[in-house]
Image 1 (cartoon, rainbow, N blue to C red):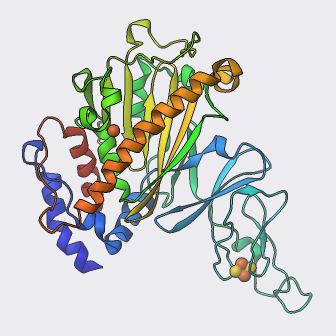
Image 2 (cartoon, rainbow, N blue to C red; image 1 turned 90 degrees about the vertical axis):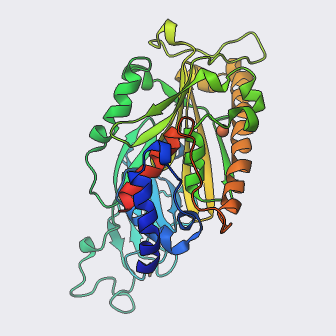
Image 3 (cartoon, rainbow, N blue to C red; image 1 turned 180 degrees about the vertical axis):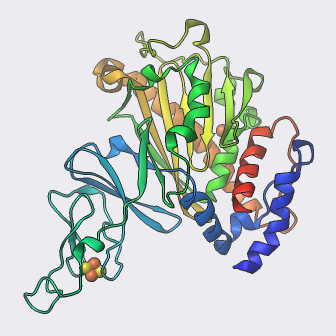
Length: 391
Ligand code: FES
Ligand SMILES: [Fe+2]
């Protein structure tokens, strides 16, 4: 492990130190090495604020949902007090993964192996026969010291943000630069109106590639004319601008010509305080490491990434509208359907490309390439963020 760290260390330093004029991408090992991915898991996915799902995917008390982050089993659930809780999804006895399917748990989370059972607050409640047949306790074993291990969490724009190693600043502070940026056209009081749609509110894509390619690709609009000819017909490359977060924890792009053209007479309702002179602005921002956000006057989406391995990634799209009516009523159903299809088509176009990038990274002739000093800027910022956090 330390060997691979040494090999890539020098190249990572180049990524951090080089200006965009001289920038290269991260080295191939960052995409093709299983060993390297363990370092990344620790430094990026345990030490940073990351996304573990969305609150509206577990709407009712007792709803549980497992996810895996680079092999690390995590459980999100809604407890009896209607709060979202996040735990390490592993039994305190002999370490079996506790919950393997999404579902509803009415009373206790029961381990499938020897039936140790936990409340929805993670308290160890039952340890059957631990002291021998029909002796459910044993001297020297304190149940309260063997609860599930809770993970620090915070809900923002329906996203379940977690910080596994509890080492980051508060999430409010962490997100302030992005939140402040959006205040001028998407004020906080409007953000409270987002409503997840039940019918056309979700899709999932499998990407046979490293998770970072999804983020890198999302950051730039350079590929628009060739990868998304449909989108490019009304939102051209020159209608986009770059976004770089300071401090560097998000990057992306915006358009100045957002103007949905769906079939039918209805129009989706807009956020009430989105200024009239900014109606055609939409922003697409990757909040590092694992969520891609899209904000528009009439809908919001969170496209979050579940990295399964160094070469396989799940992408979850969650679509939200302005208020319950827009998200659920029949009147807007056709618009939701068209919007869902539009985003699914676009994201599939991107998946085709990023899978090609994974294959390309197995070529010994390539090891980071050369960035455009103008067009690849936001992607370079993401690479810098990765490299800086690994050093
Ligand atoms: S491993 Fe869970 S009860 Fe034994
Ligand atoms: Fe794209």
